[in-house]
Length: 470
Image (cartoon, rainbow, N blue to C red; front, side, top):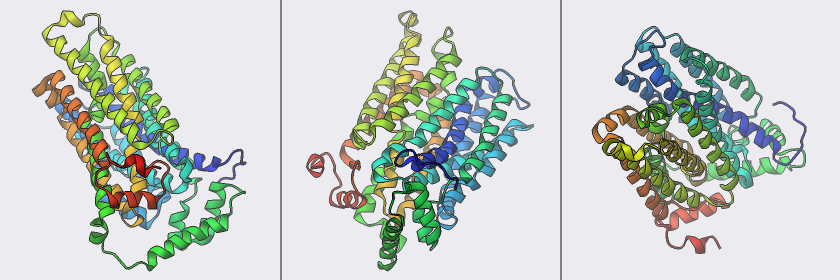
């Protein structure tokens, strides 16, 4: 651990959270790669491998496929080698992926490269939020928890922006160089104290707490508290995994988690971001498609910054509701635009700016709510004995649906048309709002025990939520 002069309270917790979230930035470069690469590789003829639209859709989809398959193995790695070492390990497949993608001579090299990158993306989607949740105090937990989505979006924005000045080969090189910086930076950060206590490494846990919480912290008391919690868990009757999963609190948490990550993907976010440039090309020939894509990326970053400031003030449920309703309105607007564009193009001759505005609103409101909040809540609503498995299930669900949406988006546009596709996404966003009202509990400012009690006592949260907060 590097020694840093203490300037303000919780300073090193912010530093460690940002260092871990740098991993999200390099994953964001993966997500951002598809939009500028699609027209250049498919139509522009860049690179040594010439692809058609269907082959490129497979290149896009192999990344979430890798994320789906790594979820369970990553859960075992988190338990066996720790949060920090798991994050560092996946620098290797991430770097290999960029090497294969950059110097691909045949289509299979591109597919393998994207698959390896997907392994890292899926692992980081699990490991980084868990790491941040275990090194952060309760009062800043929501704020630093939103760093993951913020850095992910910054990574996409970097990819969109850099691609305006370079070709795909150069974009790949730049992305790979950013990965090389991540390993040395994160090696300077500590392992989480709770994992060190769990492994019996008490002296290392003391050093980690001292670094994270500063010289004014009662380090021994903090570690003893972690040790007490660990001892209590070890003294409890041994539960089978089936028994833990079937407890009323865990079932309620699983329903909330699976629903949130399902609607996260069915909102159409990854399909929209992966094919943003193509969407703008279909919307208008007069648009500067590259600039429009950069604007959308910038608005996504803005939304995540806003989320970091309000997530511990407004509450999780309100952010999710506002997010879902706003995304629904944006999709409806996009659907109407494309409907008029095909049926009465003269009515939208001076409205080329509308798709940019609608997509900007969509990604901004996604980044305020459904982007960061589900991953923050996963660290808040699950007991320690099922948290790793729950994270695995969340990643499997999210990446599996992302794979499906990425592979079928082009076919959806062909079958339903652009208007029908966006109206379908709008319908899922409306269902998401209803789901949040009925089945998602508020977790802001509550201890884990309070959250678990609430989960056990009610399956419906549209009644009594106000009283429970008093």
